[in-house]
Length: 167
Image 1 (tube, rainbow, N blue to C red):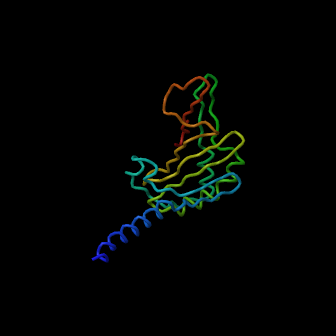
Image 2: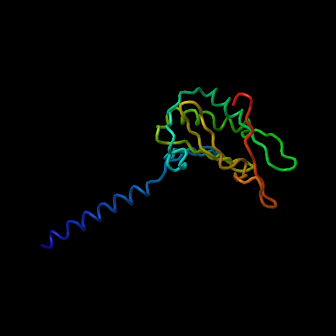
């Protein structure tokens, strides 16, 4: 009779161990010269992205990825805010090859997350593609964290992306 009671307990312990082992599996990250790249589950990106039908991987050349990176621009929402490139030429050299490989290999249930450390601050975000577009979503640019509010507190800055003519 005691053997029958031990089976459910043993199964419960095994299931708990399996679940806790899966939950603590570290995310694989590639770090090189202040640039960190990883794949994340698309569910971690939030409901709108999780509902999207992603079209990964995407076959892009390194030159095309460089063109995309060069075209990304933002402006600070301040009195003297002006349009600036998100990535500097030296940033492109550190990022382009690794991003190209990641875009070409990401599975359709993952998104690409990156962080670039620069003297001006961290630029971080996600990259994912649907059937029509490659989406570049930024969490921070040059150390300025994105705020969806149009008004920010004293001393805080906010920014917005500036679309180019071909975007």
